[in-house]
Image (cartoon, helix red, strand yellow):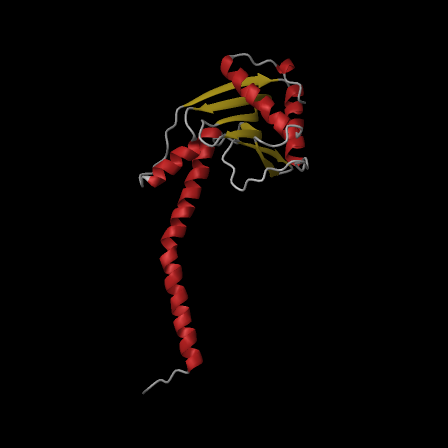
Length: 210
């Protein structure tokens, strides 16, 4: 029995085959990109805001410093056993740079990065002020009067997120943002908090951005 294909049917068959071959050829690249993204998110979480024990601890808000090449740092507001704490984590290396290097050399495995961590109990009033600052930062609408005409930004990013009403609200702010922006001011205070926790100089009365 012989089969005769019309020109339209043959064209459709060849076109479909070409698409399948193209998708198959692209699959390894897509898989590599997805693997890199997963590794990057996992390493940031593991080193800067590791999972807490939900039976004893509640994570309220997080601030993450993400420079282009310098070491990362983070500040986290938590509650544990009806008491409030702020925790700072300071890395000795840049997470993204380390993951990129590992993938470039085709030898990625979970990173072991030296980290200093500090924690201090805070008053309920200071916790309330911090939550207000986080909430105001992630919800504030602002437009730069003098936007930068640069498509690619390789400076420092400040990442904020807060857990409220069973959902996460977040914002990312660039270091070169207009200094009148409240989130920019709050980022500077958080950097001071991290530095003060590291040096044992934390004092609730010092921080007036609230």
